[in-house]
Length: 619
Image (cartoon, rainbow, N blue to C red):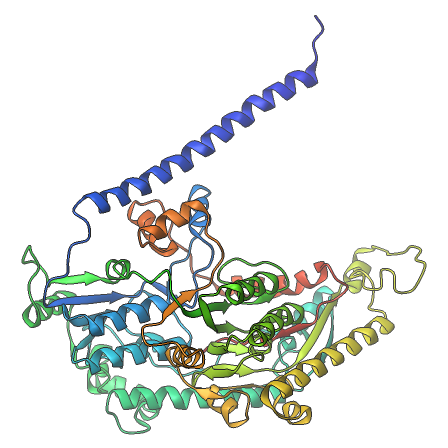
């Protein structure tokens, strides 16, 4: 019998592949069974225990405060198997749900706010949570905030509390807004990369880091106008919450070296003398205080309490009945499908159509938190909202921390636009960017040559200088899209295109500034937007709020049947020790990301992409 090496190799590979596949299924099955066991223990282990009187709700925000979780349970589990990174996050809507429920719950006597692990949040989201804290206080329940230290965002929430306590070795770090960006013009020149930019908008500064060594005068002017307004709003809010005189924070920062010297370098003592906190207490002292004010737990070692996650799992949203459908548009906008935590023109448009075709959804709220992205993807979403209004269903937009450029584009087809005071919005402008590396290949001795039937074939080749005729074509297209943008905005805002152009040109505004310029209708919260949508749809009190999201696979559907969200399922895995800890971003990663974005521009499927992106983030 002859030896056939290919057949032997094929059989060997088959055996190996079956072994790998069996191992993979075995690992995932074990993970699934662990979760099922945890759920069954929760169900048959006596069920959810009722909350006793004088129970304190402990709201500990772990991770970033976000509009929508990124990814899903399956991706989190696969990341575990592959030692990937899963970043913790807490949804804004969950925090609002918990706080508003606690305000009405007679068993909840107080709220303890722990913010040490809150990584970040946009100003508009912080304002939303601040309003919810005020609603708890208005119900007669004290809110106590404690931290080992408070950064600027954490303190924004803490300042709303009835009392604020700090660890004796802690500090309150209020620094101000603004940042230095990286500029790559000299670096790109050194390596031989040419960045070709076609844009409309004097203030459209997205691409400036690639074509200059610093901000343009227009960009610096716009940034100063924006940041000063946001800073004035932040300090006014904190001073109002803490009953401090106007200008107190700015004065303390100005004299900080002398004040620090006066306090003997003791940051805790300085925070107390600055009236930013009400006392200095260690964690055990806070525990003793909460026991004295409330009631001891069953063991008598701590105070009677219920954790944020546990309390959230007690919430049972209505699954049927007339209501308002909410679609979250959070992240950068791309053309096609995108997972949760990002915006796909096609996938988000499909969600809007799903809401429109649902007979129980009587109105739609689009919650926007996006710096923009693809002009085409933005238009897909705007068009679906336009069709929804034409079908007789009211559409209300609620702007989060950022709703600029493409984020503003998708907000135009609505009956009413709500913005927070600190929402960054506007940035009505368009650009296209095409990097070329002809100087690099020249240095390396690489030559590009060939035959084409027209000059347009292979017109954009990053290995060759950009053909001026192609640049002219792109600029014409960018001009047209900007005209389309401003025309649609003028129609939506019931004004003229020249007037939109005056406040457009790529310039960003705060929510208040946008209201003054007619770009939004109302300064209000997410809750206000829901009420407006319900009123427009003539819904009675107690209407259902339904979040319109992608269809869940069976695995996640089982979890949600037991009241667990994707994030809570991940938390189950954390408790089982299966999740890795994340690594914070570094300055090197920021440079890599920004230059990687530039590199990606050469790999687009189209000759070029029209971009409506402001490259702005909440300070």
